[in-house]
Image: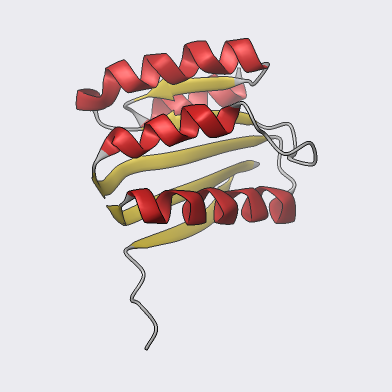
Length: 124
């Protein structure tokens, strides 16, 4: 019997920005699966700008720590994309942590709480 997915990923393109919305439950088990699905979407869509919206994703944000570890092992074939991550204000500390880490790894990354601010940053 197949286990029911804890999360959902929806995508759209809005004025040349790939918008990815994650909903459902984030677990340490689903984190790596989500990461791999996001990488596949990025390669398939081949866009220069993306928004990843985590606001509706429930669960422990401690899985973000895994993101830090994984950010040191970015696949060489991952497209170079300007990425804006949208999340809730309660996760600001983690968001700023990611921004600093992104700078160290050469990624173009911004963490915000407002999707319009994300769009504005990507258009600038």
